[in-house]
Length: 502
Image (cartoon, rainbow, N blue to C red; front, side):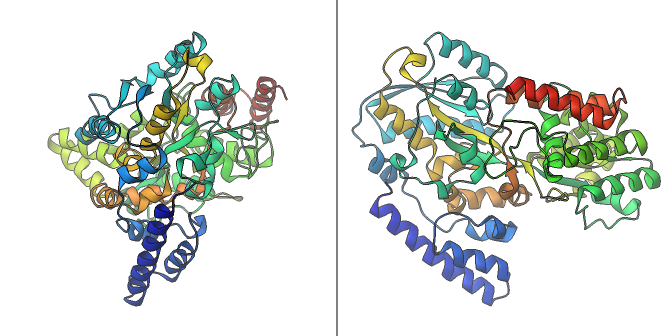
């Protein structure tokens, strides 16, 4: 259970936060909606998604102080001894220096929190980790603890290879996490992990191309129907591609950019966008699914307002097209701005002048709405404890619990994903470290504002094949006119239903 000290500190921080928010409102620096958010937050833990926006994100940051060691030792005593093995996708040579620094500092800090626990930690590459975990778990050689990308855990939970967890044993409750985060670690009504970090993308546009096309550069498309229309206008008026469509098969970029449109129209691969999904049958060929797929066809086939290479493009290719001024709109992370800055710095001559101008004219906003909702893919990672069978022997639960608890503290939930995600533990948004991130990572508050609209991919073992193969092949069938829109959607629905046994 949450300790009295934790509760008292949280109550104090909320009182201070409410007082600060009232002062900002009186000075005209905080809107009424934002003030209402803080008034609600002062009465309960958690976040009201309807009042979570760039203002509240900025105002929350830096409002609490956290004693990480003290909080951890209330959960697992400091004199706990033992060994724990741990695998995670860590930084690479291409990662920013700060990511590599915090990766090392976490291990050092954990040793300080628990001097008698030996941590055997492995940084496993993203492209290798899933198969390595599968093989090791089947052979009884899995690590005691693993932090996995959000989509992977359900496969191991369905095989009975992950231990059930109880949030209260870690001083947590469901109100400290987004609904999508809890959904992502739930299998057959049980929790098999704890969210460590979550991220969402945002809508990016080139203000200069908007102006060249006669569109208001300060106002991005509000709806997906607007995206189709804006894309057509930009193509007709400038000759440039309006929207950075991605439709490659077996590429994670594709579902991350199509599923927000599908969900916004009231559809889904299964019923993952519903409040209480059952994952029993596909919705992809319902009226909304047909409309979303038709919008893609309108842009690619009818208007020809997107790159013809969309069938093989990933976001890597879109980056090059955007910095060259060849596409006006796309979906991506806050790190896209940094990537564009890097590309501009390497350009020369006239190319550099154009690239610098494009970076200066980059803007971020919320992903457009559809007829039913605004939606975005809810990404991130979760941390799990393997069973003794998968581990190949007894798991030191005290040591494993200490490691899990350290990963999900407000401090390390922020630091461990400094450049590319956000803390899953909502208290992380109130810390000094979140304040520093917002001050140094441009547009972070915009992508963070999309979190309430996040929907995780279907939490079923077959999700990877559905997202990376079936959905992109449906797009390919419609965009190449191999099938009609209805035929492509029906084909995808049949394949999904067969895969999940519907």
